Length: 544
Ligand code: FAD
Ligand code: NAP
Image (tube, rainbow, N blue to C red; front, side, top):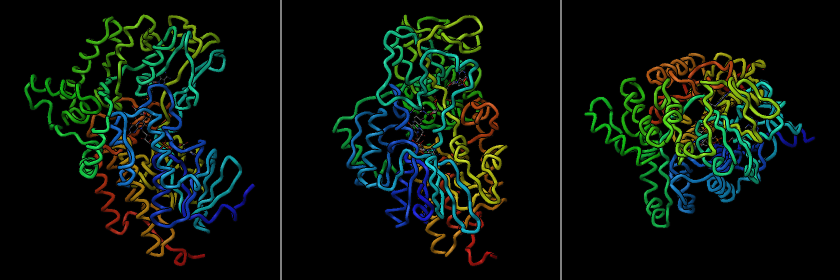
Protein backbone atom coordinates (compact mmCIF):
# COMPACT_ATOMS: atom_id res chain seq x y z
CA UNK A 1 0.00 0.00 0.00
CA UNK A 2 1.55 3.34 -0.96
CA UNK A 3 2.15 5.56 2.04
CA UNK A 4 1.84 9.28 2.70
CA UNK A 5 5.43 9.92 1.70
CA UNK A 6 4.82 8.50 -1.74
CA UNK A 7 1.48 10.17 -2.27
CA UNK A 8 1.51 13.15 0.01
CA UNK A 9 2.68 16.65 -0.33
CA UNK A 10 0.35 17.66 -3.14
CA UNK A 11 -0.66 21.25 -3.28
CA UNK A 12 -4.13 20.26 -4.41
CA UNK A 13 -6.15 17.05 -4.54
CA UNK A 14 -9.12 17.15 -6.89
CA UNK A 15 -11.90 14.57 -6.73
CA UNK A 16 -13.63 13.90 -10.06
CA UNK A 17 -12.55 14.04 -13.71
CA UNK A 18 -15.61 15.41 -15.45
CA UNK A 19 -15.86 18.90 -16.94
CA UNK A 20 -14.91 20.39 -13.55
CA UNK A 21 -12.01 18.17 -12.55
CA UNK A 22 -10.38 18.36 -15.97
CA UNK A 23 -10.45 22.13 -16.10
CA UNK A 24 -9.34 22.43 -12.46
CA UNK A 25 -6.32 20.22 -13.17
CA UNK A 26 -5.33 22.27 -16.19
CA UNK A 27 -5.84 25.59 -14.40
CA UNK A 28 -4.01 24.68 -11.20
CA UNK A 29 -1.23 22.58 -12.71
CA UNK A 30 -0.50 24.25 -16.04
CA UNK A 31 -1.33 27.86 -15.31
CA UNK A 32 -0.23 28.04 -11.67
CA UNK A 33 2.51 25.43 -11.49
CA UNK A 34 0.97 23.61 -8.51
CA UNK A 35 1.39 19.90 -7.82
CA UNK A 36 -2.02 18.37 -8.41
CA UNK A 37 -3.50 14.88 -8.33
CA UNK A 38 -7.01 14.00 -9.50
CA UNK A 39 -8.82 10.97 -8.09
CA UNK A 40 -11.57 9.52 -10.26
CA UNK A 41 -13.82 6.55 -9.60
CA UNK A 42 -14.40 5.83 -13.29
CA UNK A 43 -11.93 4.14 -15.65
CA UNK A 44 -11.56 7.29 -17.73
CA UNK A 45 -12.46 10.96 -17.97
CA UNK A 46 -15.93 12.37 -18.73
CA UNK A 47 -17.96 12.34 -15.50
CA UNK A 48 -21.65 12.47 -16.37
CA UNK A 49 -20.78 11.67 -19.98
CA UNK A 50 -18.74 8.64 -18.97
CA UNK A 51 -21.54 7.16 -16.87
CA UNK A 52 -24.77 8.16 -18.67
CA UNK A 53 -24.45 6.09 -21.85
CA UNK A 54 -28.13 5.25 -22.18
CA UNK A 55 -29.65 5.52 -25.66
CA UNK A 56 -30.89 9.03 -26.33
CA UNK A 57 -28.52 10.77 -23.91
CA UNK A 58 -27.48 14.17 -25.18
CA UNK A 59 -27.03 17.70 -23.84
CA UNK A 60 -29.95 20.09 -23.41
CA UNK A 61 -27.86 23.23 -23.88
CA UNK A 62 -26.59 23.88 -27.41
CA UNK A 63 -23.28 22.06 -27.94
CA UNK A 64 -21.37 25.26 -28.75
CA UNK A 65 -22.49 26.71 -25.40
CA UNK A 66 -22.03 23.40 -23.59
CA UNK A 67 -18.24 23.27 -23.93
CA UNK A 68 -15.17 24.97 -22.51
CA UNK A 69 -14.29 28.55 -23.34
CA UNK A 70 -10.89 28.79 -21.66
CA UNK A 71 -8.83 28.05 -24.77
CA UNK A 72 -9.20 29.63 -28.22
CA UNK A 73 -7.20 26.79 -29.73
CA UNK A 74 -9.54 24.24 -28.20
CA UNK A 75 -12.59 26.10 -29.49
CA UNK A 76 -11.14 26.27 -32.97
CA UNK A 77 -10.00 22.64 -32.97
CA UNK A 78 -13.42 21.12 -32.29
CA UNK A 79 -16.51 21.04 -34.53
CA UNK A 80 -19.92 19.95 -33.29
CA UNK A 81 -22.05 17.70 -35.48
CA UNK A 82 -25.44 18.65 -33.99
CA UNK A 83 -27.06 21.53 -32.16
CA UNK A 84 -27.47 19.18 -29.17
CA UNK A 85 -24.62 16.67 -29.21
CA UNK A 86 -25.16 13.06 -28.25
CA UNK A 87 -23.37 11.50 -25.29
CA UNK A 88 -20.65 9.75 -27.40
CA UNK A 89 -19.69 13.03 -29.04
CA UNK A 90 -19.51 14.92 -25.73
CA UNK A 91 -17.43 12.12 -24.26
CA UNK A 92 -15.10 12.22 -27.30
CA UNK A 93 -14.78 15.98 -26.75
CA UNK A 94 -13.75 15.53 -23.10
CA UNK A 95 -11.28 12.80 -24.11
CA UNK A 96 -9.88 15.21 -26.70
CA UNK A 97 -9.45 17.83 -23.96
CA UNK A 98 -7.66 15.30 -21.76
CA UNK A 99 -5.31 14.44 -24.66
CA UNK A 100 -4.73 17.99 -25.80
CA UNK A 101 -3.73 19.21 -22.34
CA UNK A 102 -1.98 15.96 -21.33
CA UNK A 103 -4.23 15.57 -18.30
CA UNK A 104 -4.39 11.79 -17.84
CA UNK A 105 -0.90 11.34 -16.27
CA UNK A 106 -2.11 13.27 -13.21
CA UNK A 107 -5.44 11.47 -12.90
CA UNK A 108 -5.72 8.30 -10.87
CA UNK A 109 -8.62 6.30 -12.34
CA UNK A 110 -10.66 3.43 -10.89
CA UNK A 111 -10.21 4.97 -7.46
CA UNK A 112 -12.85 6.42 -5.15
CA UNK A 113 -12.22 8.80 -2.29
CA UNK A 114 -13.81 7.23 0.78
CA UNK A 115 -12.54 9.54 3.50
CA UNK A 116 -11.11 13.04 3.90
CA UNK A 117 -9.95 14.39 7.26
CA UNK A 118 -8.65 17.86 7.99
CA UNK A 119 -5.42 17.79 9.97
CA UNK A 120 -5.36 21.08 11.86
CA UNK A 121 -1.78 20.68 13.00
CA UNK A 122 -0.33 19.95 9.60
CA UNK A 123 -2.91 22.16 7.89
CA UNK A 124 -3.53 19.50 5.32
CA UNK A 125 -6.27 17.24 4.11
CA UNK A 126 -5.67 13.52 4.65
CA UNK A 127 -7.53 11.57 2.04
CA UNK A 128 -8.29 7.85 1.93
CA UNK A 129 -9.21 5.89 -1.17
CA UNK A 130 -11.02 2.60 -1.67
CA UNK A 131 -7.67 1.10 -2.67
CA UNK A 132 -6.37 1.70 0.81
CA UNK A 133 -4.11 4.56 -0.21
CA UNK A 134 -3.51 7.66 1.86
CA UNK A 135 -2.79 10.97 0.23
CA UNK A 136 -2.38 14.44 1.61
CA UNK A 137 -2.69 17.91 0.19
CA UNK A 138 -2.93 21.51 1.31
CA UNK A 139 -6.20 22.01 -0.53
CA UNK A 140 -9.02 19.63 -1.36
CA UNK A 141 -11.17 20.52 -4.36
CA UNK A 142 -14.39 18.62 -4.83
CA UNK A 143 -15.33 18.25 -8.48
CA UNK A 144 -17.68 15.35 -7.80
CA UNK A 145 -20.55 16.93 -9.72
CA UNK A 146 -24.09 17.93 -8.83
CA UNK A 147 -25.67 14.88 -10.42
CA UNK A 148 -23.37 11.93 -9.93
CA UNK A 149 -24.83 9.98 -7.01
CA UNK A 150 -27.55 7.64 -8.28
CA UNK A 151 -30.98 7.60 -6.70
CA UNK A 152 -32.47 4.14 -6.84
CA UNK A 153 -35.49 4.27 -4.56
CA UNK A 154 -35.81 1.63 -1.91
CA UNK A 155 -38.64 -0.26 -3.64
CA UNK A 156 -40.10 -3.05 -1.56
CA UNK A 157 -39.24 -6.47 -2.96
CA UNK A 158 -36.64 -5.20 -5.42
CA UNK A 159 -34.20 -7.92 -4.34
CA UNK A 160 -36.83 -10.57 -5.15
CA UNK A 161 -37.21 -9.38 -8.74
CA UNK A 162 -35.81 -12.04 -11.11
CA UNK A 163 -35.54 -9.89 -14.26
CA UNK A 164 -32.66 -7.60 -15.25
CA UNK A 165 -32.40 -4.05 -13.87
CA UNK A 166 -30.54 -1.12 -15.37
CA UNK A 167 -29.84 2.37 -14.06
CA UNK A 168 -29.46 5.04 -16.74
CA UNK A 169 -26.57 6.67 -14.88
CA UNK A 170 -24.54 3.43 -14.89
CA UNK A 171 -25.33 2.24 -18.40
CA UNK A 172 -23.18 -0.66 -19.73
CA UNK A 173 -20.53 0.39 -22.24
CA UNK A 174 -21.63 -2.18 -24.82
CA UNK A 175 -25.33 -1.25 -24.57
CA UNK A 176 -28.35 -3.38 -23.76
CA UNK A 177 -30.46 -5.34 -26.23
CA UNK A 178 -34.15 -5.09 -25.29
CA UNK A 179 -35.47 -6.73 -28.46
CA UNK A 180 -38.41 -9.04 -27.81
CA UNK A 181 -38.59 -8.07 -24.13
CA UNK A 182 -41.32 -6.74 -21.86
CA UNK A 183 -39.64 -3.69 -20.38
CA UNK A 184 -40.68 -1.36 -17.58
CA UNK A 185 -39.20 2.11 -17.13
CA UNK A 186 -39.59 4.13 -13.95
CA UNK A 187 -39.06 7.87 -14.19
CA UNK A 188 -40.22 10.57 -16.57
CA UNK A 189 -37.71 13.34 -15.87
CA UNK A 190 -35.17 14.58 -18.42
CA UNK A 191 -33.50 11.15 -18.54
CA UNK A 192 -36.74 9.19 -18.86
CA UNK A 193 -37.89 11.42 -21.70
CA UNK A 194 -34.68 10.82 -23.60
CA UNK A 195 -34.57 7.05 -23.23
CA UNK A 196 -38.28 6.18 -23.54
CA UNK A 197 -38.62 6.68 -27.34
CA UNK A 198 -35.56 4.45 -27.83
CA UNK A 199 -36.87 1.74 -25.53
CA UNK A 200 -40.22 1.87 -27.32
CA UNK A 201 -38.54 1.23 -30.65
CA UNK A 202 -36.70 -1.85 -29.30
CA UNK A 203 -38.89 -3.53 -26.71
CA UNK A 204 -41.74 -5.87 -27.56
CA UNK A 205 -43.82 -4.07 -24.94
CA UNK A 206 -42.90 -1.00 -22.94
CA UNK A 207 -44.62 0.05 -19.71
CA UNK A 208 -43.83 3.59 -18.58
CA UNK A 209 -44.43 3.98 -14.84
CA UNK A 210 -45.17 7.67 -14.39
CA UNK A 211 -45.61 9.32 -11.01
CA UNK A 212 -45.42 12.97 -12.09
CA UNK A 213 -45.97 14.15 -15.66
CA UNK A 214 -43.58 16.71 -17.12
CA UNK A 215 -43.92 19.97 -19.03
CA UNK A 216 -41.52 18.89 -21.76
CA UNK A 217 -40.62 21.22 -24.61
CA UNK A 218 -39.26 20.23 -28.02
CA UNK A 219 -35.52 19.78 -28.37
CA UNK A 220 -35.37 21.47 -31.78
CA UNK A 221 -32.23 19.64 -32.79
CA UNK A 222 -30.54 19.92 -36.21
CA UNK A 223 -27.22 18.95 -37.75
CA UNK A 224 -24.37 21.46 -37.89
CA UNK A 225 -22.39 21.36 -41.11
CA UNK A 226 -18.97 22.80 -41.84
CA UNK A 227 -20.39 26.18 -42.76
CA UNK A 228 -22.38 26.39 -39.50
CA UNK A 229 -19.29 25.42 -37.52
CA UNK A 230 -17.17 28.06 -39.26
CA UNK A 231 -19.74 30.72 -38.39
CA UNK A 232 -19.86 29.54 -34.76
CA UNK A 233 -16.08 29.52 -34.49
CA UNK A 234 -15.85 33.03 -35.87
CA UNK A 235 -18.39 34.20 -33.30
CA UNK A 236 -16.98 32.49 -30.18
CA UNK A 237 -15.62 35.65 -28.50
CA UNK A 238 -18.93 37.48 -28.87
CA UNK A 239 -20.95 34.42 -27.97
CA UNK A 240 -19.00 33.89 -24.76
CA UNK A 241 -19.63 37.49 -23.75
CA UNK A 242 -23.34 37.03 -24.34
CA UNK A 243 -23.29 33.82 -22.29
CA UNK A 244 -21.56 35.45 -19.31
CA UNK A 245 -23.99 38.34 -19.28
CA UNK A 246 -27.14 36.24 -19.56
CA UNK A 247 -29.20 35.00 -16.60
CA UNK A 248 -28.66 31.29 -17.29
CA UNK A 249 -25.45 31.35 -19.32
CA UNK A 250 -27.36 30.74 -22.54
CA UNK A 251 -28.22 33.91 -24.44
CA UNK A 252 -31.77 34.51 -25.67
CA UNK A 253 -32.42 37.66 -27.63
CA UNK A 254 -36.13 38.14 -26.99
CA UNK A 255 -36.69 37.56 -23.24
CA UNK A 256 -39.44 39.96 -22.28
CA UNK A 257 -40.41 41.01 -18.77
CA UNK A 258 -44.04 39.98 -18.58
CA UNK A 259 -46.38 37.49 -20.19
CA UNK A 260 -49.27 39.47 -18.70
CA UNK A 261 -48.22 42.81 -20.15
CA UNK A 262 -48.93 41.76 -23.73
CA UNK A 263 -52.19 40.88 -25.51
CA UNK A 264 -53.09 37.20 -25.57
CA UNK A 265 -52.51 36.86 -29.33
CA UNK A 266 -49.02 38.31 -29.05
CA UNK A 267 -48.19 36.05 -26.11
CA UNK A 268 -49.45 32.99 -27.96
CA UNK A 269 -47.36 33.92 -31.00
CA UNK A 270 -44.28 34.32 -28.80
CA UNK A 271 -44.88 30.95 -27.14
CA UNK A 272 -45.34 29.34 -30.58
CA UNK A 273 -42.11 30.92 -31.79
CA UNK A 274 -40.24 29.70 -28.68
CA UNK A 275 -41.76 26.23 -29.13
CA UNK A 276 -40.52 26.09 -32.72
CA UNK A 277 -37.03 27.23 -31.75
CA UNK A 278 -36.78 24.50 -29.11
CA UNK A 279 -34.27 24.22 -26.29
CA UNK A 280 -34.86 26.42 -23.24
CA UNK A 281 -36.35 29.26 -25.30
CA UNK A 282 -39.82 28.90 -23.76
CA UNK A 283 -38.51 28.46 -20.21
CA UNK A 284 -35.75 31.05 -20.02
CA UNK A 285 -36.21 33.09 -23.18
CA UNK A 286 -39.88 34.04 -23.48
CA UNK A 287 -41.29 35.92 -20.45
CA UNK A 288 -39.46 36.46 -17.17
CA UNK A 289 -42.51 36.56 -14.94
CA UNK A 290 -43.46 32.96 -15.67
CA UNK A 291 -40.71 32.16 -13.16
CA UNK A 292 -42.19 34.42 -10.46
CA UNK A 293 -45.89 34.98 -11.00
CA UNK A 294 -48.53 32.25 -10.81
CA UNK A 295 -50.91 33.89 -13.27
CA UNK A 296 -48.19 34.47 -15.82
CA UNK A 297 -46.96 30.96 -15.26
CA UNK A 298 -50.42 29.53 -15.94
CA UNK A 299 -50.37 31.00 -19.45
CA UNK A 300 -47.22 29.00 -20.24
CA UNK A 301 -48.48 25.88 -18.46
CA UNK A 302 -51.76 25.99 -20.44
CA UNK A 303 -49.81 26.45 -23.65
CA UNK A 304 -47.68 23.36 -22.98
CA UNK A 305 -50.73 21.28 -22.03
CA UNK A 306 -52.37 22.23 -25.34
CA UNK A 307 -49.30 21.03 -27.24
CA UNK A 308 -49.31 17.71 -25.40
CA UNK A 309 -53.03 17.13 -26.11
CA UNK A 310 -52.46 17.87 -29.79
CA UNK A 311 -49.79 15.22 -30.11
CA UNK A 312 -51.24 12.28 -28.19
CA UNK A 313 -54.08 10.40 -29.89
CA UNK A 314 -55.81 8.91 -26.85
CA UNK A 315 -57.41 11.74 -24.82
CA UNK A 316 -57.13 9.82 -21.52
CA UNK A 317 -53.44 9.17 -22.08
CA UNK A 318 -52.93 12.81 -23.10
CA UNK A 319 -54.61 13.98 -19.91
CA UNK A 320 -52.42 11.69 -17.80
CA UNK A 321 -49.38 13.22 -19.50
CA UNK A 322 -50.48 16.78 -18.67
CA UNK A 323 -48.98 18.17 -15.48
CA UNK A 324 -51.63 19.84 -13.32
CA UNK A 325 -50.40 20.23 -9.79
CA UNK A 326 -47.21 22.26 -10.04
CA UNK A 327 -46.23 25.35 -12.04
CA UNK A 328 -44.46 25.22 -15.37
CA UNK A 329 -40.65 25.39 -15.23
CA UNK A 330 -40.30 24.71 -11.52
CA UNK A 331 -38.59 21.40 -12.25
CA UNK A 332 -35.76 21.50 -14.78
CA UNK A 333 -37.31 21.85 -18.21
CA UNK A 334 -36.94 18.46 -19.92
CA UNK A 335 -36.51 18.54 -23.68
CA UNK A 336 -37.99 15.86 -25.87
CA UNK A 337 -37.73 14.48 -29.36
CA UNK A 338 -40.77 12.36 -30.26
CA UNK A 339 -41.53 11.58 -26.61
CA UNK A 340 -45.25 12.32 -26.68
CA UNK A 341 -45.81 10.48 -29.98
CA UNK A 342 -44.31 7.40 -28.31
CA UNK A 343 -47.64 6.98 -26.54
CA UNK A 344 -49.37 6.60 -29.91
CA UNK A 345 -47.54 3.31 -30.46
CA UNK A 346 -49.36 0.01 -29.88
CA UNK A 347 -46.50 -1.44 -27.84
CA UNK A 348 -46.39 1.38 -25.26
CA UNK A 349 -48.55 1.61 -22.14
CA UNK A 350 -48.54 4.56 -19.76
CA UNK A 351 -49.03 3.43 -16.18
CA UNK A 352 -50.33 6.23 -13.97
CA UNK A 353 -48.84 5.67 -10.53
CA UNK A 354 -50.98 8.46 -9.15
CA UNK A 355 -54.09 6.47 -10.01
CA UNK A 356 -52.63 3.12 -9.02
CA UNK A 357 -49.46 3.41 -6.90
CA UNK A 358 -46.48 1.10 -7.25
CA UNK A 359 -46.83 -1.33 -4.35
CA UNK A 360 -43.81 -3.57 -4.71
CA UNK A 361 -41.55 -5.61 -6.92
CA UNK A 362 -42.21 -9.34 -7.11
CA UNK A 363 -40.16 -12.05 -8.82
CA UNK A 364 -41.96 -11.60 -12.14
CA UNK A 365 -42.27 -7.84 -12.24
CA UNK A 366 -44.02 -4.87 -10.64
CA UNK A 367 -47.26 -4.93 -8.73
CA UNK A 368 -49.32 -1.75 -8.58
CA UNK A 369 -52.55 -1.33 -6.64
CA UNK A 370 -54.64 -2.67 -9.49
CA UNK A 371 -52.50 -5.21 -11.38
CA UNK A 372 -49.28 -7.12 -11.91
CA UNK A 373 -46.94 -6.11 -14.76
CA UNK A 374 -44.80 -9.04 -15.85
CA UNK A 375 -41.43 -7.66 -16.95
CA UNK A 376 -38.21 -9.09 -18.35
CA UNK A 377 -36.28 -5.91 -17.51
CA UNK A 378 -36.73 -2.68 -15.58
CA UNK A 379 -34.92 0.56 -16.36
CA UNK A 380 -34.52 3.04 -13.52
CA UNK A 381 -34.49 6.65 -14.73
CA UNK A 382 -35.04 7.79 -11.17
CA UNK A 383 -32.46 10.55 -10.97
CA UNK A 384 -29.83 11.53 -8.46
CA UNK A 385 -29.18 12.46 -4.87
CA UNK A 386 -28.16 15.86 -6.17
CA UNK A 387 -25.34 18.01 -4.76
CA UNK A 388 -24.94 16.46 -1.34
CA UNK A 389 -25.06 12.74 -2.24
CA UNK A 390 -21.54 12.53 -3.67
CA UNK A 391 -20.10 14.94 -1.11
CA UNK A 392 -21.43 12.94 1.85
CA UNK A 393 -20.20 9.68 0.32
CA UNK A 394 -16.64 10.99 0.74
CA UNK A 395 -17.07 11.10 4.53
CA UNK A 396 -15.49 14.54 4.77
CA UNK A 397 -14.49 15.51 8.31
CA UNK A 398 -13.33 19.01 9.05
CA UNK A 399 -12.20 20.88 12.13
CA UNK A 400 -12.52 18.82 15.36
CA UNK A 401 -13.71 15.81 13.36
CA UNK A 402 -16.94 17.55 12.31
CA UNK A 403 -18.68 15.47 9.62
CA UNK A 404 -19.97 17.41 6.62
CA UNK A 405 -23.17 15.38 6.80
CA UNK A 406 -23.74 16.56 10.39
CA UNK A 407 -22.78 20.16 9.65
CA UNK A 408 -25.40 20.13 6.88
CA UNK A 409 -28.02 18.08 8.69
CA UNK A 410 -30.60 20.81 8.13
CA UNK A 411 -29.41 21.67 4.65
CA UNK A 412 -26.17 22.88 3.11
CA UNK A 413 -24.48 25.93 4.59
CA UNK A 414 -21.96 27.49 2.26
CA UNK A 415 -20.40 30.77 1.30
CA UNK A 416 -20.93 31.25 -2.45
CA UNK A 417 -21.50 27.51 -2.81
CA UNK A 418 -17.75 27.01 -2.88
CA UNK A 419 -16.69 26.81 0.77
CA UNK A 420 -18.22 25.86 4.09
CA UNK A 421 -17.34 26.80 7.65
CA UNK A 422 -15.62 24.11 9.69
CA UNK A 423 -13.91 22.68 6.62
CA UNK A 424 -10.78 24.76 6.01
CA UNK A 425 -9.10 24.65 2.61
CA UNK A 426 -11.98 22.67 1.11
CA UNK A 427 -13.40 24.09 -2.11
CA UNK A 428 -16.44 22.78 -3.94
CA UNK A 429 -16.92 23.40 -7.65
CA UNK A 430 -20.60 24.20 -8.39
CA UNK A 431 -21.62 23.34 -4.85
CA UNK A 432 -25.04 23.87 -3.30
CA UNK A 433 -26.15 27.52 -3.15
CA UNK A 434 -24.30 28.40 -6.34
CA UNK A 435 -26.14 28.82 -9.69
CA UNK A 436 -24.50 25.58 -10.94
CA UNK A 437 -27.14 23.71 -12.94
CA UNK A 438 -29.25 26.83 -13.45
CA UNK A 439 -26.41 28.36 -15.40
CA UNK A 440 -24.75 26.79 -18.43
CA UNK A 441 -22.66 24.21 -16.53
CA UNK A 442 -19.32 24.54 -18.34
CA UNK A 443 -19.50 28.31 -17.69
CA UNK A 444 -20.47 27.69 -14.02
CA UNK A 445 -17.54 25.30 -13.74
CA UNK A 446 -15.03 27.64 -15.38
CA UNK A 447 -16.21 30.47 -13.16
CA UNK A 448 -15.89 28.49 -9.94
CA UNK A 449 -12.55 26.90 -10.85
CA UNK A 450 -11.11 30.30 -11.78
CA UNK A 451 -12.37 31.83 -8.54
CA UNK A 452 -10.94 28.96 -6.47
CA UNK A 453 -7.62 29.10 -8.35
CA UNK A 454 -7.39 32.86 -7.86
CA UNK A 455 -8.11 32.43 -4.16
CA UNK A 456 -5.42 29.76 -3.78
CA UNK A 457 -3.00 32.01 -5.70
CA UNK A 458 -3.85 34.94 -3.44
CA UNK A 459 -3.33 32.78 -0.34
CA UNK A 460 0.14 31.87 -1.59
CA UNK A 461 1.07 35.47 -2.32
CA UNK A 462 -0.12 36.55 1.13
CA UNK A 463 1.82 33.76 2.83
CA UNK A 464 -1.43 32.27 4.16
CA UNK A 465 -2.17 28.58 4.49
CA UNK A 466 -5.66 28.29 5.97
CA UNK A 467 -9.02 29.67 4.84
CA UNK A 468 -12.62 29.05 5.84
CA UNK A 469 -15.81 31.11 5.70
CA UNK A 470 -16.73 33.37 8.59
CA UNK A 471 -19.93 32.36 10.36
CA UNK A 472 -21.67 35.65 9.69
CA UNK A 473 -20.82 35.78 5.99
CA UNK A 474 -21.96 32.19 5.52
CA UNK A 475 -25.21 32.75 7.40
CA UNK A 476 -25.88 35.79 5.24
CA UNK A 477 -25.26 33.81 2.03
CA UNK A 478 -27.57 30.98 3.15
CA UNK A 479 -30.24 33.55 4.02
CA UNK A 480 -29.81 35.39 0.72
CA UNK A 481 -29.99 32.16 -1.31
CA UNK A 482 -33.17 31.15 0.47
CA UNK A 483 -34.73 34.59 0.11
CA UNK A 484 -34.03 34.69 -3.64
CA UNK A 485 -35.45 31.19 -4.06
CA UNK A 486 -38.68 32.22 -2.36
CA UNK A 487 -39.11 35.12 -4.75
CA UNK A 488 -39.58 32.50 -7.47
CA UNK A 489 -42.12 29.71 -7.91
CA UNK A 490 -39.36 27.09 -7.74
CA UNK A 491 -39.96 26.06 -4.08
CA UNK A 492 -43.62 25.29 -4.82
CA UNK A 493 -42.73 22.08 -6.70
CA UNK A 494 -41.08 18.91 -5.50
CA UNK A 495 -37.82 18.33 -7.34
CA UNK A 496 -34.16 17.53 -6.90
CA UNK A 497 -33.52 21.31 -6.84
CA UNK A 498 -35.22 21.18 -3.44
CA UNK A 499 -33.83 17.80 -2.38
CA UNK A 500 -37.38 16.53 -2.13
CA UNK A 501 -36.76 13.56 -4.44
CA UNK A 502 -34.79 11.86 -1.65
CA UNK A 503 -36.75 10.68 1.41
CA UNK A 504 -35.52 12.41 4.57
CA UNK A 505 -33.40 15.00 2.77
CA UNK A 506 -33.98 18.52 4.11
CA UNK A 507 -36.27 20.48 1.78
CA UNK A 508 -34.21 23.56 0.95
CA UNK A 509 -33.37 25.14 -2.37
CA UNK A 510 -29.97 23.80 -3.42
CA UNK A 511 -29.45 26.27 -6.24
CA UNK A 512 -28.77 30.01 -6.22
CA UNK A 513 -31.61 31.47 -8.28
CA UNK A 514 -30.39 35.04 -8.61
CA UNK A 515 -28.79 34.27 -11.99
CA UNK A 516 -25.18 33.99 -13.11
CA UNK A 517 -24.29 37.68 -13.44
CA UNK A 518 -25.49 38.53 -9.91
CA UNK A 519 -23.65 35.55 -8.46
CA UNK A 520 -20.44 36.37 -10.32
CA UNK A 521 -20.60 39.91 -8.97
CA UNK A 522 -20.87 38.56 -5.39
CA UNK A 523 -17.80 36.43 -6.06
CA UNK A 524 -15.84 39.31 -7.60
CA UNK A 525 -16.74 41.52 -4.61
CA UNK A 526 -15.48 38.88 -2.20
CA UNK A 527 -12.12 38.63 -4.02
CA UNK A 528 -11.76 42.38 -4.48
CA UNK A 529 -12.45 42.88 -0.77
CA UNK A 530 -9.54 40.62 0.22
CA UNK A 531 -11.89 37.69 0.91
CA UNK A 532 -13.35 39.53 3.87
CA UNK A 533 -16.05 36.89 4.31
CA UNK A 534 -13.34 34.35 5.08
CA UNK A 535 -11.03 33.81 8.05
CA UNK A 536 -7.51 33.35 6.83
CA UNK A 537 -4.31 32.66 8.69
CA UNK A 538 -0.74 31.48 8.39
CA UNK A 539 0.74 28.73 10.52
CA UNK A 540 3.31 31.06 12.03
CA UNK A 541 0.52 33.12 13.62
CA UNK A 542 -1.17 30.09 15.21
CA UNK A 543 -0.14 28.90 18.67
CA UNK A 544 1.52 25.46 18.48
P1 FAD B 1 -19.54 15.13 -13.20
O1 FAD B 1 -19.54 15.12 -14.66
O2 FAD B 1 -20.69 14.52 -12.49
O3 FAD B 1 -18.18 14.43 -12.74
C1 FAD B 1 -17.96 14.10 -11.41
C2 FAD B 1 -16.98 12.95 -11.37
O4 FAD B 1 -16.61 12.73 -10.01
C3 FAD B 1 -17.56 11.65 -11.87
O5 FAD B 1 -16.76 11.14 -12.91
C4 FAD B 1 -17.53 10.71 -10.67
O6 FAD B 1 -17.21 9.39 -11.01
C5 FAD B 1 -16.45 11.35 -9.81
N1 FAD B 1 -16.62 11.06 -8.40
C6 FAD B 1 -17.70 11.30 -7.63
N2 FAD B 1 -17.46 10.93 -6.36
C7 FAD B 1 -16.21 10.43 -6.35
C8 FAD B 1 -15.39 9.89 -5.33
N3 FAD B 1 -15.82 9.78 -4.05
N4 FAD B 1 -14.16 9.48 -5.66
C9 FAD B 1 -13.70 9.59 -6.94
N5 FAD B 1 -14.43 10.09 -7.93
C10 FAD B 1 -15.67 10.50 -7.64
N6 FAD B 1 -25.79 20.39 -17.59
C11 FAD B 1 -25.90 21.33 -18.53
O7 FAD B 1 -25.59 22.51 -18.29
N7 FAD B 1 -26.34 21.01 -19.78
C12 FAD B 1 -26.66 19.74 -20.12
O8 FAD B 1 -27.05 19.48 -21.24
C13 FAD B 1 -26.58 18.73 -19.13
N8 FAD B 1 -26.91 17.47 -19.42
C14 FAD B 1 -26.83 16.53 -18.44
C15 FAD B 1 -27.22 15.22 -18.75
C16 FAD B 1 -27.20 14.25 -17.79
C17 FAD B 1 -27.60 12.85 -18.14
C18 FAD B 1 -26.83 14.57 -16.47
C19 FAD B 1 -26.84 13.52 -15.38
C20 FAD B 1 -26.43 15.86 -16.16
C21 FAD B 1 -26.42 16.85 -17.14
N9 FAD B 1 -26.03 18.15 -16.88
C22 FAD B 1 -26.13 19.11 -17.86
C23 FAD B 1 -25.46 18.51 -15.58
C24 FAD B 1 -24.02 17.96 -15.45
O9 FAD B 1 -23.94 17.56 -14.14
C25 FAD B 1 -22.98 19.02 -15.83
O10 FAD B 1 -23.27 19.57 -17.08
C26 FAD B 1 -21.53 18.54 -15.90
O11 FAD B 1 -21.35 17.43 -16.72
C27 FAD B 1 -21.00 18.31 -14.53
O12 FAD B 1 -19.60 18.12 -14.61
P2 FAD B 1 -18.78 17.90 -13.27
O13 FAD B 1 -17.38 17.64 -13.68
O14 FAD B 1 -19.05 18.97 -12.31
O15 FAD B 1 -19.41 16.59 -12.62
P1 NAP C 1 -35.27 13.48 -12.18
O1 NAP C 1 -35.53 14.72 -12.91
O2 NAP C 1 -35.09 13.55 -10.71
O3 NAP C 1 -36.44 12.47 -12.54
C1 NAP C 1 -36.57 11.26 -11.85
C2 NAP C 1 -37.86 10.61 -12.26
O4 NAP C 1 -37.99 9.41 -11.50
C3 NAP C 1 -39.09 11.46 -11.95
O5 NAP C 1 -40.05 11.26 -12.94
C4 NAP C 1 -39.55 10.88 -10.62
O6 NAP C 1 -40.91 11.08 -10.34
C5 NAP C 1 -39.24 9.42 -10.84
N1 NAP C 1 -39.13 8.71 -9.57
C6 NAP C 1 -38.19 8.88 -8.62
N2 NAP C 1 -38.45 8.08 -7.58
C7 NAP C 1 -39.58 7.40 -7.88
C8 NAP C 1 -40.35 6.44 -7.20
N3 NAP C 1 -40.02 6.01 -5.97
N4 NAP C 1 -41.47 5.96 -7.80
C9 NAP C 1 -41.81 6.39 -9.02
N5 NAP C 1 -41.12 7.31 -9.72
C10 NAP C 1 -40.01 7.80 -9.15
O7 NAP C 1 -33.94 12.74 -12.74
P2 NAP C 1 -33.38 12.73 -14.23
O8 NAP C 1 -34.46 12.55 -15.19
O9 NAP C 1 -32.24 11.77 -14.24
O10 NAP C 1 -32.80 14.20 -14.42
C11 NAP C 1 -31.98 14.79 -13.44
C12 NAP C 1 -31.30 16.00 -14.04
O11 NAP C 1 -30.18 15.59 -14.85
C13 NAP C 1 -32.15 16.80 -14.99
O12 NAP C 1 -33.06 17.62 -14.35
C14 NAP C 1 -31.10 17.54 -15.79
O13 NAP C 1 -30.58 18.60 -15.07
C15 NAP C 1 -30.04 16.48 -15.93
N6 NAP C 1 -30.29 15.74 -17.18
C16 NAP C 1 -30.18 16.43 -18.35
C17 NAP C 1 -30.44 15.78 -19.52
C18 NAP C 1 -30.35 16.51 -20.80
O14 NAP C 1 -31.34 16.69 -21.46
N7 NAP C 1 -29.19 16.91 -21.17
C19 NAP C 1 -30.78 14.43 -19.54
C20 NAP C 1 -30.86 13.77 -18.34
C21 NAP C 1 -30.61 14.43 -17.15
P3 NAP C 1 -41.38 12.35 -9.44
O15 NAP C 1 -41.21 13.53 -10.33
O16 NAP C 1 -42.76 12.04 -9.07
O17 NAP C 1 -40.45 12.39 -8.26
